[in-house]
Image 1 (cartoon, rainbow, N blue to C red):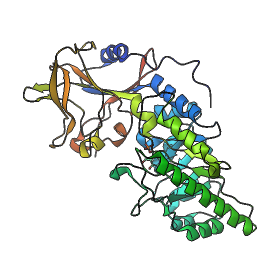
Image 2 (image 1 turned 180 degrees about the vertical axis):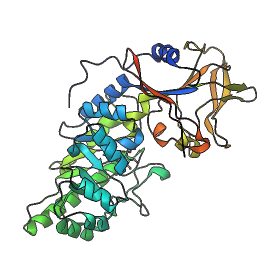
Image 3 (image 1 turned 135 degrees about the vertical axis):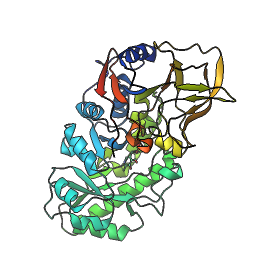
Image 4 (image 1 turned 90 degrees about the vertical axis):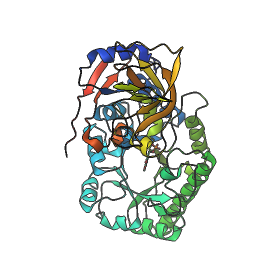
Length: 411
Ligand SMILES: Cc1ncc(COP(=O)(O)O)c(C=O)c1O
């Protein structure tokens, strides 16, 4: 992976520079717009790369932001991609990701999909169940891994925890004998574990990783005992860290230290699959303020809601940094603030981006900036009410460029 630090513009390029630039490019139909902040992306890629030993392969989870230009840049910087569906494998190939840097993790792969990825040299395909192993040809070019459910609670919110007893993901680690037998019977070369998103308990994750490493060592012993040359070579330890601002004391650095302190992992090639940690802070969205309805609190109606912030509307909304700008892109004076509920445009009662948030006095034609919306937002775009997907732009620290025009939704 290349050293990015010397050539890149400052990641703190102020949004007060890019917002007027962006607004000046929009037309009347652009009621909302999404922008990727590349200096922030480069800074986070570099932070991730340098937190771990150089041999660790980082495959960024496409599902958190599948924008093709973004994927291209991630690949250009030497990173790999994790695909949750065959469509995402196609995106990764389109983004020129070499097969050996692609991980395919769909829990419901078809026979046709398996036949196709089996021909891609060293693409890591993680099976979700042992039954899936039977679908692979005996001679396969890809690397087969078994997803293991470590049966630990790493402190994720229930909706994003995938490593409890009833999880549909992976083979429970308690089925040790069956896993070892499967690794003897099929050409398995990797184990995989993704404990869940927004993990808070690194100690529990450490125990899960240790158990995974011990299982891999046991498998290798069984393979050696059976006189087979094949070994588990690779451990894919998934993603799962929440977003954070960067510092020497970041959770990512702490996590990397934990991973590298585990002796049982030392002899394996490690793969990670971070999504939201990388992408969250790397995009912002702007929506025109359409109506301001006075009340206690006042309601501010905008053009993005449960369509873009689907997960937030249906579960618990994240605390997106919000700011208000005038039609020319000047920040509104923050001396006098008012409480607002931020209502989205969809016809259902739960469509709010934020409640009781304090902002400058708003009026029709102002723009609301919703920052830190790069992960699990646009990627989950909901077709409810058939509203058009906004155009996407990118800021490179000096200029902006359109990545994609508005896309109408058709059923
Ligand atoms: C298998 C797998 N890997 C990686 C990820 C990315 O997780 P996160 O965005 O929390 O890092 C997910 C998220 O659902 C996942 O299911």
